[in-house]
Image (cartoon, rainbow, N blue to C red):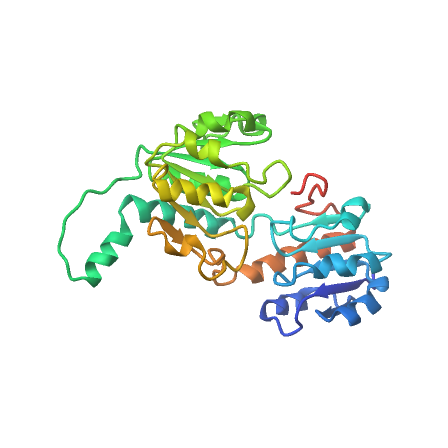
Length: 323
């Protein structure tokens, strides 16, 4: 397979796209985020690389014009924001960036747990006030972390939490796939979510966004949690019912929340989450670590070389399942 036309949806000045220089020299590559230009060239594309994570409609707008495209890759792990009915219904294969950002997000789960265990907000406040006041703290050892969505991110969080001597339980749509996982003390199907939540000191949401997972953690789930529990979301914002979470935080039904993702992004000025002192808030940048986006492009380059050779691709997604 040679002389392929690759359409890269991105600003041509994007720094991490320099990794694309590693593609086979005979590849015809067009990089643009100009809709008019992309629509004109899309009928010639064999492959589309969706590398623009800011314009979520760009792929959906261009795809109907790409009549001969055989493969679409998206830089991100989450595909819910870029899937369109046309793409889902088509026979075009799709892959994603699954696994590239797992280490940073797994570490962020640990950071959030330490933030609440050692009450780092209080430490900073006392330091700023020049106030010497001792208080009790908690170790992570012996405490239970529950993971909702035991994929790449969830398993990385489990691996790191094990080093702290934590007990690990998880929810997975097909729990039999993790039945022998040495990191887990227990694995539950989705219908036992509330039962699992009642055991947990910390809950890390790392599930993809699908019709089944949208708002799967809502008022009944917060009611099932310990009052001392902390919810952490490093997956997709709408997996948690934000209004129910805010009510639980304000009423003290749960202790706190560590959030990197939200129902609406950017989080609007004046949003209640900005004002709660039992919330650790990150503007969806927990995985913006040095080299992360370059590694995501390298994954695409490796897959492109597989595609040219007719070899099976890595990270093929189920478009109908949404991950």
